Amino acid sequence: MTITPCSSGGYQLLTEFWTPRPLAEVFPFFADAFNLQILTPEFLNFRVVTPAPIDMHVGTTIDYQIRLHGIPIGWKSLISAWEPPFRFVDEQVRGPYKFWHHEHTFEVRDGGTLIRDDVHYGVPGGWLAHTLLVRRDLAAIFQYRAEKMRAQFGGNEVGSPAVCLAR
Image (tube, rainbow, N blue to C red; front, side, top):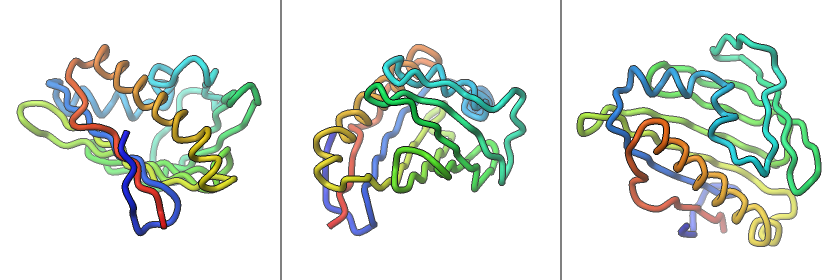
């Protein structure tokens, strides 16, 4: 993971993953909120609380339960952009971050699909909490996510995850 200065508030995590699978197969997997359970490491005890089926569109809210360092935490996200099969955004309404804005994009590239996660987030406790806990946790979460995507679709990460630190 690389940390570089950035001008936006909070932090930015950017990852890219290329798979040889077609967009028509990849997007529906990510459009199903319950598949997030597959992509999230066991140490978070992640589960979707909102009953199935979840109709994804702008304005959809989804409730999750996680266990962060042993502490149970409710997380509610809002789908603030929904542009299938190319893009959607989930934003934290309630949860462990000061703010969380996660843009998922899907692009046809080199006979497959490029999956990009661009996360802007703020951390209670600021720089110290980010350095001691959050940065390491997010690195583990997105590394696990890449491993599960590789198992699900084949392919590889494109470059290293990058984190921007606001000044």
